[in-house]
Length: 418
Image 1 (cartoon, rainbow, N blue to C red):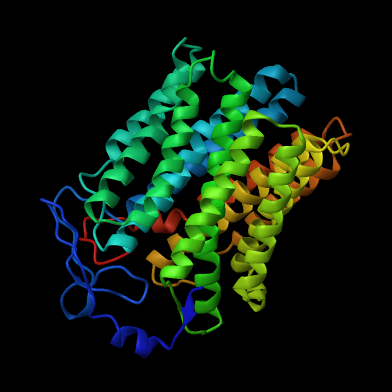
Image 2: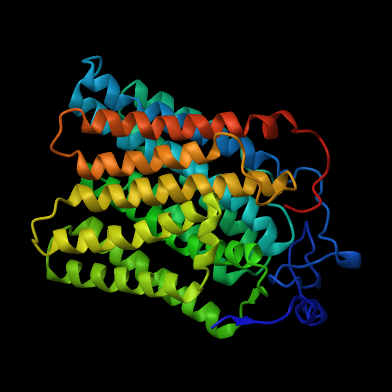
């Protein structure tokens, strides 16, 4: 278990040293309370030429939001007869899982990697990631025969960049996250003889959900304790081992569902995962953070991941519940509500106002919650998917509006920490 100690004591204990054995960068220095290296006089090391600027995560977030908003509009377009329903359903899931979601994850992980290691990811993979993102969109729009392989390029490149950086800085515990991102790309590249199109999509979706489960276990309790002015949790060896086991179990259970959506073993694994996640959320003990709208959205998203696993377990057991209910709880609650709140938190923190609430931000969370409600309650209604898609798109468009100022303030200043 991570232990809670006063901040002054945590800083006093910081002089232990960790070495990043890299030819291009040295992470040697005292450790910060969160376990990342500090530079001279307690400041984080500055970036070198060719390093990824922390402002770039805003660009990734905004591109991911624009992509997600356009993908959500496919359902209203199908309702109006502008697109065939089957075509809209296929394009909707492919653009989200192989386009918008990897861009969102790139913004999360490239920023977090700097905090974990004290050094930005270098060489900067941003240009390659943006190129792979654009190439994937063009390949899918043109119905190119290699579109499936092109879809996997973005998560594969991101996973490789993260793995190389984490290996250089000897961050073994974080390599599982790089492996999950790489697995999303590998699912797209798997031959049809091994994985059919639906199974490949489910596997990429499942690994992305497992990644969100792990990241939420780090981000939500840390922000909650900061907001409530509680002492930070300092990870110890036991808590690191527990996180590794939980990540492996979540990945295995969701991957089993992707390969075999029904059956007793799948139902049992997903039930255990749902129970474990609910216990983890209760263990955070940060319920009073719910009075802040962004933190409430994070909590709701983390709970939706747990309830989504339970719904998939019920469906796998033949309980009469549609699989789509569990999928949409994971997608709209995890990728949607939790993803929006974490993106907004990182943007506000970069601007020096970690708990500020921008105009339109609460409306974005309300729109995403409305999309989830419509998708769950309006399944029998012909206009339900179209209304839910419109609410989903509205949520991401509102995010674009209230983060516009942060994008205008981008500049060539050097990184001093994220």
